[in-house]
Length: 448
Image (cartoon, rainbow, N blue to C red; front, side):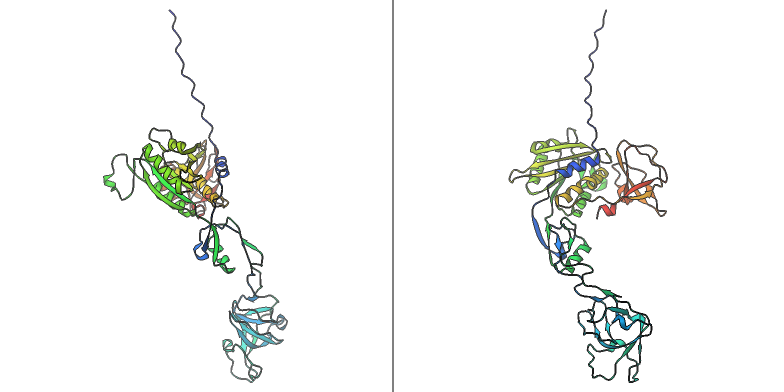
C-alpha cells in the first residue's frame, strides 16, 4: 500500500537585507528640502538659531590701530636701547584719541585706546619706571599726567624704559581680525555665543535666521503612563512610565525645534488616524516612538500609509534596527509633513534620534549635518563575540585615559546612557580586545 506524499509548506520569503546606517542617512537626507521662510531676530535672542544668509562685514575689526596692553605708546626709533628716557606728554584712555607724538615723546596709554599718530609700538607698564622731572620735582605717578599737557608746562614727567621696543609690539592692527568685505559667518551656520559676539562686533543688532521647524511629538501604547498620573505603588500590571516622551522632547528642543507635545495616543486605529492628520496640518515633521512594527496593536504603520506613504527600514545597527520614514498629506493645506517612527525601546530611540533624526532636522534648516568628531581611545574592556550589525556601545572615559564599558548593553537600559558619556562605534563583525583603539563619540558634543 503506497502512501501519498505529504504536502510541503511553501518556502518562507527571503528577508530583505538590512540597510547600512550610512545608506539610510543618505536616503533620508536626499529626500529633505530646506524649509522656506526667514525670520529676523535680535542678535541677543539668536542663540541656537541657523543663519539664513551669510554675514559680510561692512567694516574692519579693529577699526583702528589700538593698544593691546596698558603701558606707553612710543616711536620705536626712540627706544632702541635699554634705559632710554622719554617725556610723557599725554594720557590716552579707551574711547579717546591722542595727539601726534614727536621724537623724544611718549604717551601713557591703556588697553583698547587708539595708537596716536607717530607711534608704532607699545611698551607695557611693567617694563618701565618713572624718573625725576626736569626741574627735580618729586617723581609723580604716571596716571597723574593730564589728558593734554601744554608746551608751557615747565615740569615734564619722564619715563625710563627697561627694554627695547620693536615696531608693532603690543599693537592690534586695524583689520587684523576682520576686513571690510570678509564673509565671516556662513549661510546654514548654527549660531552660538562666539558667533553672536562676532556679529555684534560688526554692529549687527539683528540677524536673518531660518524659521524653527515645527515638530509634533506623540507616543503610542496603552501600556504608557505619565509620571505623576499614577504613583509607582499603584501602577497596574504591564504599565510603564513614558520616558521616551521626555528625552525626545528635550532632544528636539536642543536641535532648535518648536515642539507640540501631543502626549500619548491610544492604541486604536481611529485615534491614531486623527492624531496624525491633525499633526500634519500645522507641522513640518511628526515624530513618534513605538507602534511601527507588524503587530495587531501597532496602528501607526497602516495609519501613515493610508494618509501618505511609509517606508519601513531595517537598519544594520545596534541598538535601533527598526526605523520608519515617510510623510502624511495635509488635508487643508498643500504639501505634507515628514514622518519619523522611532523604536519603542528607549536606548534604541535615543541613539536613532542622534544618528538619523538630528541630521534630518538640521537639513530642514539648511544646515550641513556634522557628526561628532570620533576620538581614538583605548578599550579597557573586551568584547570577544562580534555582532552582525554595527554596534554603538555605551562607554565612559576613566581616569587612566581609557574607556570602560557599561555591563548591560540592552536597548531597554536607559541607565547606560546616563552612566556613559558617549559611545564607541564598532563595525559589524569586529571583536574588541583590551587595549584596542576605538572610535569614541562624545554625548556632550553630539547634544550641543
